[in-house]
Image 1: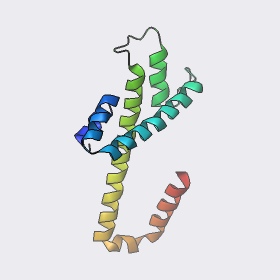
Image 2: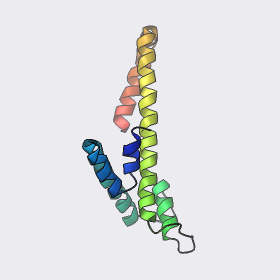
Image 3: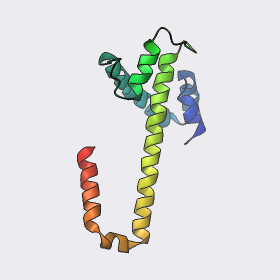
Length: 132
């Protein structure tokens, strides 16, 4: 997915420096910003964690990390948590982007679909905009 150097840079600050040297400073800067957002999400989950009622993947991951009986593979388990959340975010973004691209393509190629049921399109986009 994407530029392999940027993907590698997600693993360490050292790789971020390497990416900057290759002239991809904007991308590495974006990755740092995305990490900061994900770190805030993880911190919020830590503060509101209810081990008996996990809300999502992040809660389950944090519960596993905090469980003393669970063997830890590496000392950087929190980094792995952040990278796992990042992977899910990126995968979801890519899927959504691809789906919308194909939807617009098919509506452009087959304009009769737009004419056939415009109310469905309006309802869909209104619902999407109201729920995001």
